[in-house]
Length: 237
Image 1 (cartoon, rainbow, N blue to C red):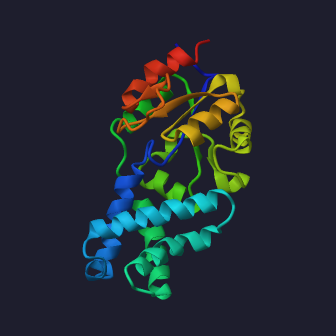
Image 2 (image 1 turned 60 degrees about the vertical axis):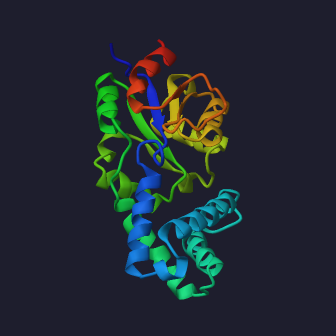
């Protein structure tokens, strides 16, 4: 059976591309390169502080209160300052290095390519909607060999709004030339991906590989290999 009029939109980070593990590997390389373990005491201490500042600054960026060029280095600057090292030049170098090497990491969630292959063979049209920086998201897709699977690739920067804004979903539907009732969004963030998609009239699946969600959303999966069967049930003709 072919589902040639059905469309599936994927989030990229933490849904297909293992952002947390890839980011951690890049950060380890940076800390090693600049020999900063004596400053932080251990990588884990650095990583916990960095994650806190990065999350806060991404929140400001998502609200339009922070420019991305500042976000890129300020997350390192704030972390260095927390440990008593005030060195803006170093923070900017770390920020540049992170943007360079992080998207070139290639760890994906289990069964990513196998599931994308299966969905394509079933006739679904596959697309990406991501809040990540445009210049690095394409590098991730290319380095992981994932770009070939997707037709429309929509980054929030092109729209000027982040998920869950209605504008980004409407823009993506237009780019994919599909109606919302024939579309499904899958992502790891209930608010950005699931709630945003539902408000835009799409169906939605929550990807929760670490079983952290407490919302009991009906269409939740922990492994991508659960997706093909679930999609056929949701996107019934």
